[in-house]
Length: 290
Length: 161
Image (cartoon, rainbow over all chains, first blue to last red; front, side, top):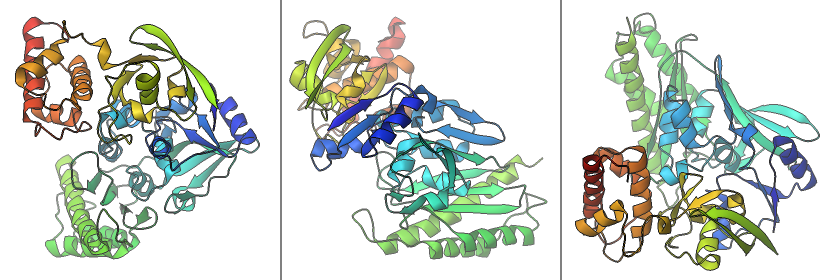
């Protein structure tokens, strides 16, 4: 096993071109588990932890997160991005949040990755770079193709993620046996888009990849329209509408049975969570209204 | 194959020749004779191996030793000696927060990290800060007592721990 140590992005991309079999490491919170246990022996490891260029972030019309940004930096620097910081705070423990990175969560591509519902709800794109090809941006739904499978090429590295900021409250929530240190049994990110008068709902850990609940989104937006809620955020949705939204969210889930939960439990829990999340963001809209 | 790793460890420049896949924890315990950081789960679940890497609280089992090259590492051994305990160590003894002792070094490091940044944390903040440290003996209440005791003493003395 070779360890390739680089100090700049240019050197990192050149190293990945030379050794496409090298597995990138940043925080090590996923990769080191397999190496310590002996079941993962990558031919080479490319250490990105000294590449400062990957730790940048921007927050203007777009949110841009560099691949090397840790959860802890997100919590410190982007505290106003509510769903994002809720997701970052839900990851592991302080020790894990001090090390784990955006690039690691995206690159590992676990359906349970805590940032992924936030990216999917925001219609984020993943920025990839290579020594030969420069940069390309891939939409989240084209990037994640299956459990821990993505469309990244062997000579590419994840540079970061970006999405257009939208006006309106958002929320991230997850279900697990503890309030910390758990891989999600199910998770979601719900965002109200005031400009497009739309609801965006992404579900995590209930399918082969993070997925969007299209029918629930369309129903939710129409129900708010019908209640007059887009013009007047104080207008509530009735219980039947919230229940139908939850039912459609559960219907979008494609969960499996595994050691963290059964398919039936996940489908039920994601529906409950979706209904609660809708009530939370609607309460936020009502509270923020003039 | 092996590589050389050179790092500042507890204020001293130390170096070791290790297998490339070695974790920082393995290097500290097996090469640098610093067994205070404990090896329990090796997957970041238990916090027994907690150290500071460039001032950040981390699980040393999840840091590739090569990633510590040229960096600053501080372990539980930097805090006190058997004769001269760090205030957080003293609080653990006084509160009876030590039973088998295996999780204790990691918890001492995690509590010290918390009080360095936040000298008077609420109970909720203490619980969140210690979420990554498992103890199978105490049921945690005495550990929370120790964290409160250390915090109170820090406040009373006006010192940082």
